Image 1 (cartoon, helix red, strand yellow):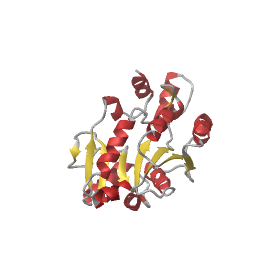
Image 2: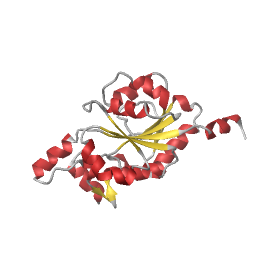
Image 3: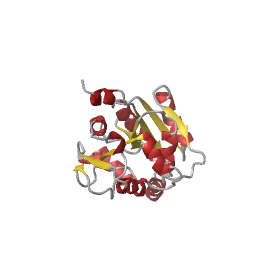
Amino acid sequence: MSEYILFYFFMTISTIITAAGKNSRMRKDQLALNIDLKNKLILPFKDSTVIGTTIDNALKANIDECIVVLGHYSGEIKEAIYDNYKDKVKFIENNPVDVGLSVSLYNGLSNIESDFALCITADQPTVSTETFNKMIEVSQNSEDPFHTISILRRRKTGLLDTAEGLGMPFVAPRVNLMKYLEKEDDNLNPILRKIFADGYTFYGIKEKNKKELLNINHYEDYLNLLD
């Protein structure tokens, strides 16, 4: 067995699931439709909830641990799922809560010691375990895993020539990613573009089906993904 394969075998990976958003677009839609206000992450999905399905898909992937980062509506979310996942995932909470996605992700990464992180948003219940594992496989088998981002494609697949339009989910080296996130309070795409500009290799992973490319932002998104 080669030294490279031995090195790969001992690399560890954790999942960070961010679930700390304001839920503003979903809340606005629910008010306009005159339906009960409910955080999108705890809406029913399959035999679980939106966030529960995301967690389940992540837990079945080739990972060592799972962290869920809470913020806005943390009490509502924990009340809905905590008992089912308290022994399976670690919950942490942003303090203060009114921070950007980059801060949520940084807080999650600060609570793990793994070499790599599979970074997911909780409103991605349609991304399959197979796709998560493909991202992990491509990351770990790359020529330089510590300078590689394996990410669900938005436009092209394979070796990418831009980071425009990209977001989660992705696999990245934990320590290097934290250096870019530190002192940032922003969405992720501007940060991913900085990483790309610094010469990191980006690989776009093809989705298992088209629904994997959709996040749940609006109530209509939720209904479409239920079909």
